[in-house]
Amino acid sequence: MNLLELKNVNKIYCQGESEVVALKDINLVVEKGEFTTIFGPSASGKTSLLNIISCLDKPSSGKFLFDGKELSGLGKKDLDLFRENNIGYISNDFDLIPYMTIYENVEYAARLVEKNNIKLKNKVMQILQYVELYDLKNKRPNELSSAQKKRAVIAVVMVKEPVLVLLDEPTINLDSKTADQIMEIIIKMNEDLGTTMIFSTRDLQMIDYAYKIVGIKNGKIGNNIEFESWMYYYGLRECLFFL
Image (cartoon, rainbow, N blue to C red; front, side, top):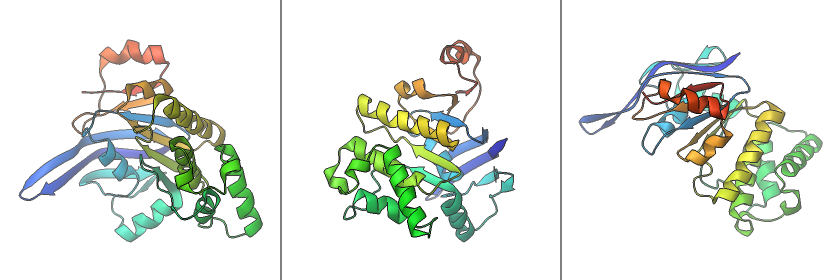
């Protein structure tokens, strides 16, 4: 069953008197529970695409449907509310409150969805165990390694139980070993919790974790027959690659 669908989506930014086409005629379907990888070089349109899907931005034209509901015509207030209730966003930054402990960071996020104090504590403890940070719950962000901070960010996002999680190049500033550890946690959450995830990357090594790839270049995605053997090698169900 489809969770989201983009139909002929375009995004144009105005810079003075000129226009910059960030996305052109994007057609994309993501099914519920799917792990989709958006692959492309810098300035290819990955972040613009994620901004549309996350409701941080609106398409200049085209339709965006989420669970059958069209969001393209909603105003900013309604989009903000929809995003808060449905979508988690993990960037390549460490979005943690520095003066709070890791437990407090996760608890703060959890209070947005859980008011019962006993259930709240259990929820926070469970997610910290899941990302292997339970023993470090009383540490502050500056006392953690890069890998531990990234796992803490994942806990903050996942504790709110979003329907969809977007990951904008979350491994780009990490060494390969740390990146692999983070990806293994993300894949495990997708498989165990059934959370739909969309992961963007420019790192070809991260393709090893892909199930479905959407290639994007110059704001466009599309099929290319030359990738059929490569797609078969990786066992991918679907591959949309550069036009």
